[in-house]
Length: 477
Ligand SMILES: [Zn+2]
Image (cartoon, rainbow, N blue to C red; front, side, top):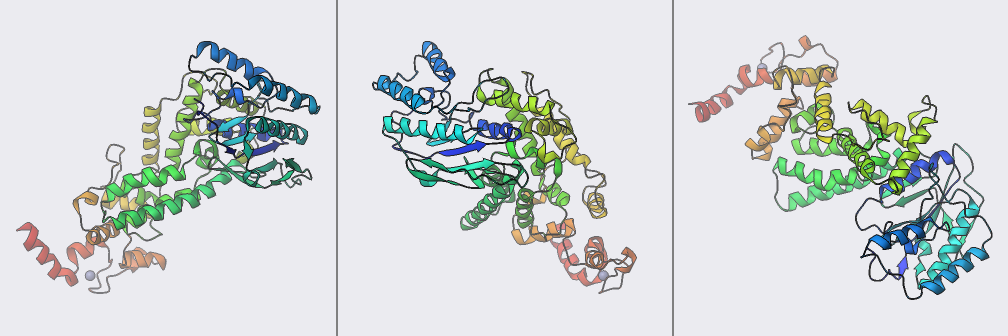
């Protein structure tokens, strides 16, 4: 519902999209915010700035069936006159952004943010003029310092020589703008938003670590749950839009944040393979979480009614994907093409135009199976870890955090154990690897046994005989 009174100041973000191929991605991104709670798109059409009549008709239909619909304000009639005057005063065609079905994308409101989309500079000027007259009629002001224009171009084409003004002030044109937490760039693919999310996620990670330490919380399982709530959500914000390309292409800065946190939790060195870190903690890699996020988003869009802008934007992207050369680089593929490939690669191929959504529980199982299967072709070090710690094979049923994480409460001991289990130690087996020595050339410096590895230190090396006896007398006798 609309608030009782609109905020006195409203921030506005403005785009002009000169490149049709980018418009579907932009529309998808902006549309992704529509399905969030407290949005005013569905109920705020009486504040619509669009010049086509469709939104007004939609509002009238809505009022007919919705007793809670906001009644027209008392000054609506003069406002309509002023609107008409604004239309008359601006003879420039509005150039509204339309999806493939011909439906115009209405102005996108979210709290006090507003996005204006246009395909031509003239269209954007028209909308700015309309916004100005609307705000004048309602006593609203626009914070021009927070209002910026992003001009989408391709390749090395010059951004634009166009200048845009609002209320006598020039509106700044910028290459990057953060809209509802997602960074949009005038030339780069949507995946470029990931680096900004990684920065935000890293800050959240440091804050979480500090909070846990301040409160004396050392339980690793609690730490991982807290990471999912506070950091993973930051790293993955808007991922349904910007992540499909990255899911298909692999390692990202966001994944490094996740691994840095888990390695820190276990006390492992940075070079410990990601697969080992994930297996010890029973976690899935970020792309698996992002795939689920994409699938949920697609399912929500599929379940929407036919008139919702977000669904129309997805269908628009599907239509664009059908017309796009599949040989183009992934970054230049439409969002729908990337999503189809992500879901197919995860074992859940999906017709985006269908009504039934993706089966999420089955997809989650398939992602886990796929992750576990990736250990089969992993590096020699990972294979050795599977052999020594998992008894030779790893299964989806057993893929949970290692039991010592809750059985060993003292962090110092837990870290030592994790280091020995994962090969993050300083014995010759590991240091010899760095010097590229053959395994037969990594003897124990204390007793000259042919190989100094964890098994040798625990069971055989005479250097630790005292410790071994002490342990046996305490725990085994
Ligand atoms: Zn030895």
